[in-house]
Image 1 (cartoon, rainbow, N blue to C red):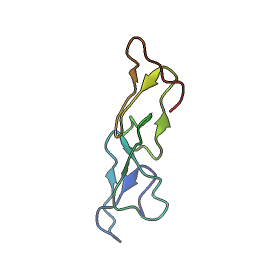
Image 2 (cartoon, rainbow, N blue to C red):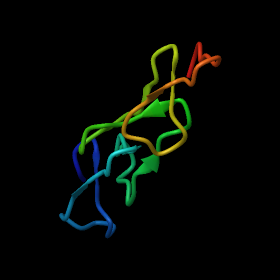
Image 3 (cartoon, rainbow, N blue to C red):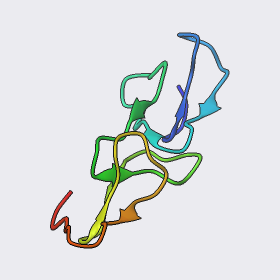
Length: 79
């Protein structure tokens, strides 16, 4: 079983791969892939085990490594 933030592409294999930026896995069930972060959240670490919400005033579409500032005249108050 792989560590948090890593997955095994081949079931029951010892080979573990880091999740790419914008994706995460807690590997609670022997994950064979990582899950894309939902819109409003991000993962910017190669071994992310959870997606983090964007701060107020920032946004992200799904599968992002960072949140961007809202455009002038718009606002995001939650993820």
